[in-house]
Length: 234
Image (cartoon, rainbow, N blue to C red; front, side, top):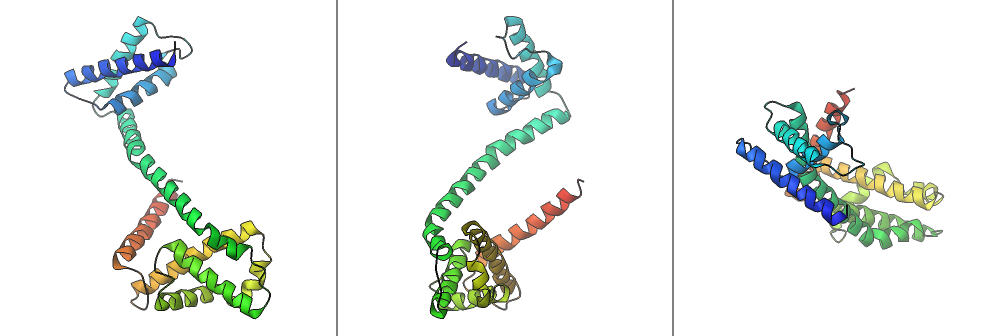
């Protein structure tokens, strides 16, 4: 069977199953029906041979089984498939969006990161310039505040100095490029966290928009809750 023929058979199956569940007063989306078809065919208990073409009897049986399962009341298996469909339709697109956003961000930050990781700073002036580049990178990477705002830069510099004093640049320069990049990521997270905490205490947070703060802080709270709930599963 060619791919086009296979797709035609699948469309026919989905349509027949959709009509069957609708006739029982339980209409279902084509996506949900397609997921159920896949689940039923791959379940060994249903004894469908995926290595051969389905016979007419196989098709009738598949339609009947899928319709029964899609209209079953209080079925944990059906609820699981519905959750999977919801996840794939919502979070896959979000994940792809975030991945694309991360790719664009890294493209834009690439030159700034290379200026830091490939520097040959030797004099005090060079080290001072390198440190300032790191502050700028942290602000650009976090997306919270502008490197062009004096107060924002001053606060970000103080936050960076509290966890990564300028004298530690010597150790930083001795690292491999990969380790330098990793440390930049970690410093960005820590410095951003400090600035958000200062905003929360009303003791700083220069350049942090109230809406940005609310979203980031709620995201942090949700992450803590999800981490706790995950830990309770084991």
